[in-house]
Length: 415
Image 1 (cartoon, helix red, strand yellow):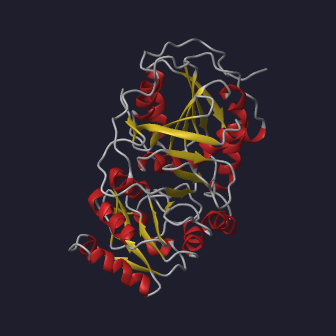
Image 2 (cartoon, one colour; image 1 turned 45 degrees about the vertical axis):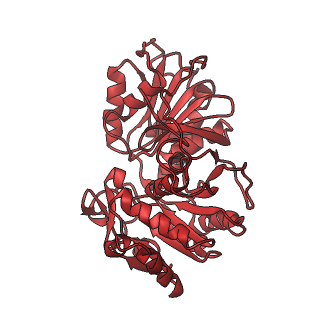
Image 3 (cartoon, rainbow, N blue to C red; image 1 turned 30 degrees about the vertical axis):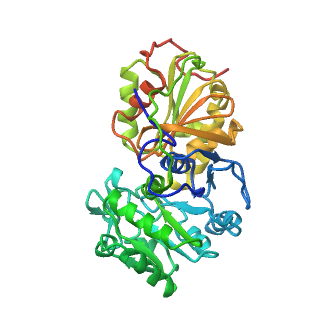
């Protein structure tokens, strides 16, 4: 199975400029890195400005701020944006469902810039913005159950999600207007001390928004989803050949450990496809993880899936993910990894002391393959992404040969 290579594909419309991108979780950082279509590095360690990168290299920082208190999340953003080198394009990745510390982080992000151009549409996932409202398959976000795992209701608009940050709507008529009209509409918002919130339904809309923002020059900052990062990649990225395989001759074939840390209902069906292909499953109950955790033994099956069973409220989510990461730590040390959910991915890599990833390509939208410094493969994917065959597609990209099941201890737990 082929995958889209990082740093490849598309056409170039502007000279390459380095991008410094910030994300609030690891799956979003990986999605951004591959969307930029340029040599990139993902940093997981705590960082502070100025952040240096190699010539021509974009840098994507996982601030790991999705679950932090608002004030701490804002401070994490300020630490890396108060002194940005001239010529650097600054991009803030946000969740397309507007989750996380959006208001606090956007306010911190806007502090030292000329203005922030905001576009939270993600057309590839059928998430659009019309009238300043996020729509999922045409339904306003606040009328869906997309925030069912959150402790508060979904915001009724992008402006509401931004809190006290002064903003102004930019309708589709301006986004799709005559050449130069969008740039002037953005400039007018800045002159009024407001940050433009742009409607967008297609990638062409996002391309226009990114191009107009870049035309405004240094000090203009961009904030949006992986869709807006993709628009930057099409404008600033480097061309090349598409990647053909997730593996190359001579690669070490390690056991593949899949850690499903998401509570999304789709996860059960995705795992079922893997089990039908011969993967081995280890189920961990929320009760055991929270009250009597044990370490998993290293897997001997070609493909092992670890998933959580049972319900846990939003207040226990971070504690549960940390316990899951500790539980799989020993088993994960000599495995290639597939990690679903940004928080799960970050916690597992933290316990493995992985602080640096190089994106290789994208197996499907949001499922990003990266390499660790020691050559292991790591696929990260947001919990809310992917069709029923998502995990199957990922495994077949990493392991083109059929999975051969080797029986293991039913619990997989080390004595």
